[in-house]
Length: 381
Image 1 (cartoon, helix red, strand yellow):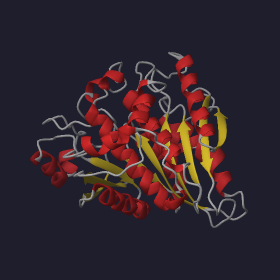
Image 2 (cartoon, one colour):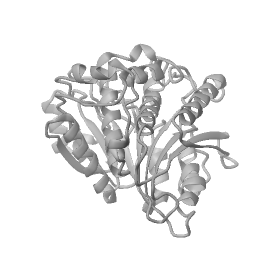
Image 3 (tube, helix red, strand yellow):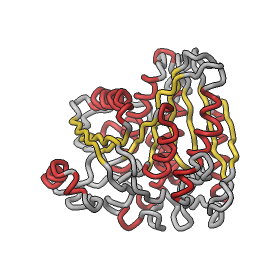
């Protein structure tokens, strides 16, 4: 995604992870195959329309294979903007409360398009690979109370006119905006009384991991606005070993659930720091992504064992949190991995520390704020 200054106040949670053992149904091999396959080539409407179309067909095919209710959502940008028509792919796994106002819907999203100059393996092939793997595992479970929505967004890399984003948030031609305005709100109101929307996990550039000294850069003014956090990063020689959650204050419960999952899955306590911040964010502040963000070197050669292992860890943690929120009955799940490489999450993760990633948590109560915030700020740093 392109960078954009955050104009709203939000909370940041930093999690330092000490991973000892991991029990996971997440397949490292599946993640690798996604990154080296449909999400390893440029997926841009003019630079490689065939690659983008192939990725979209792959998403649709996987959603259908996993038994999700699939919607292909075509949308158009507003007149006068530089955006173009786009296509979201939405997959729904309905819970027992589906179709009633007692449903408590949770969603997971990532974008499948890229800029014209980059294959976008990390931005955002990593988010797409994680989401598809989550969908695979969750659809092996036959019973859950609440509905889960998976969304592959299009046109998230399309530039927008800032004034249009603030004045006409439902008509700026990005996939997340049209999903909220044209699909999600009608879906929530389909029973006459709105169902509850617990939130959405936005996955963006979640394979960016680097523990070399002085690889973590920071936005201008960070030291002034967040002196304590800056000192903590300085004390660790600015290594890229932490994960960041950006959220609204009312998403505290979602963050708490994710933090607890991280503790449970990592088998060690997770240290968390919460900050109230206003800061510009992009995905180009760490390691090789400082050079490869929106560039040709964000490609399959950037995949390493450590990065892939961390991607599996993030995928597992969001997976388990989403299953908890949807109240999935785990005794109805079937292990369908067939992948001996799943144990690699355990062996490769010993003494592994994590990475700075951003997962944005949004609620329908502030949906206008949400779609603006998603368009501007869901980036991994």
